[in-house]
Image 1 (spheres, rainbow, N blue to C red):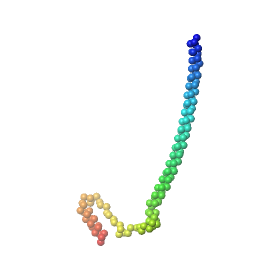
Image 2: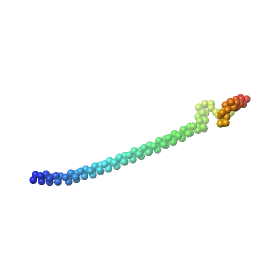
Image 3: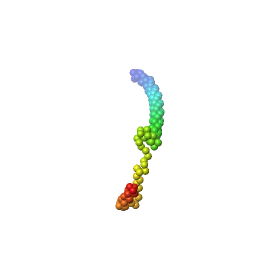
Image 4: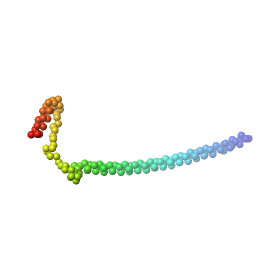
Length: 126
């Protein structure tokens, strides 16, 4: 008889354990689902913030590139040279030296290239 009582208690207790385990599994899945959706939302927010920051940095970079191009322009450099009274101006023709580019045929004949250099220097001094 004792055996029957314990068996009936186990039989009644088994479905309750299964049901509670199933409820815990469903509740855990629901909590996991909500947590996952929360993480997806937070990551989306971070992506949007970083895309906005990237756009701002690209705009700043473009503005700085435009400013650099303006500061390097010959008209701006000329204006700044005048503002600072540097005494700079266009080069005079006598200050310009033009050097001919040697042709590949002359590369083996060093004496001929020396004569050419002496002839051109002599012509420039006359």
